[in-house]
Image (cartoon, rainbow, N blue to C red):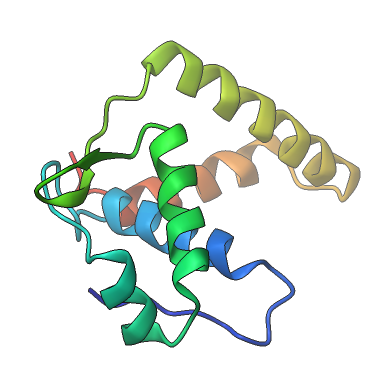
Length: 125
């Protein structure tokens, strides 16, 4: 598992880790049923505190990206409620698109950008 953490970033380490795992799922680097490294192993591998990894895994579990299995630890499990996910995405996009409009980004430019991002995820589906 290749996780890139920027220790100079203003973003919390657990959020960076969470985002890297979600990106791995979106780009098909991680598949449904794949076991993530143990908290201790991942913390040692990337040189961060075990509590930071545990927090990232907890957030991923709450968001429906992983489940915790007693034998296998954290496992990729995409059981997110689709309607809830769409509503969350709509809320986030609404703010992002409003910022873009204020900066003069056209609807067509936004659509092209979304298409480009989705093309990067094509191995997923």
